[in-house]
Image (tube, rainbow, N blue to C red):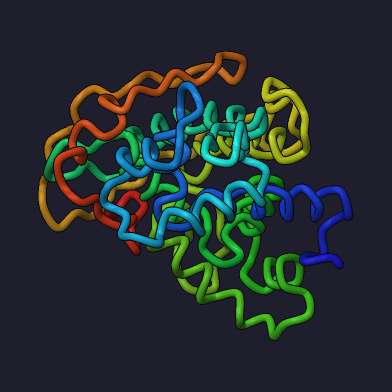
Length: 280
């Protein structure tokens, strides 16, 4: 069933990317995936790496990741079971450095050094807002679109005024720009900068090699970069310390817990920021 008034191929593309984001965005999922980097682990070994999870929380999380095809449960004997990434899960991890790179450039600087995992969680919070993926897709392909026209494309079966709550949120998040009420909407520099992330997620979700992102019909041909906007910040914040460099889609992920959790390993991790974008 179509979710937009876009062509079927585009509609399916957006639906796949939305589903891919929904697999990893739930609380702790990315942290569990990253904790599984390396050789497969027994349940007790994994539990020790994610010790902030309360009793009973890890098992359902693992089951959902197994059901999504990202984690594989291997039963060697009745008393020896291990968990590790599937090929699909390992490929998805190689997209995470792209998210970190985007966050370092476009999210407002924090008042303390942030571990890469926190950049990832903050970014995923923005990308999984309702209708966000479809709106970003349309604005990338059409450049500027009025609210009414955008509503007819993104939510054709709803009252057209329903487009404004998600649009206002994307403007507040710094992913979309407009010159004011009644004016068309367009991607901001931050929204346009999501091209490598969304293009690669599209390739992954379609089961294609990740380097196919460069040929994506919407995100694979970058247009002129919009002029950066002046973010309004409630306080000035120092730049984060150096984080692992982004890797090309062809390179296998090589996460190290010390890099990812260096500012969060000794304390219970916080939840992803509920609102933010360039304004954390």
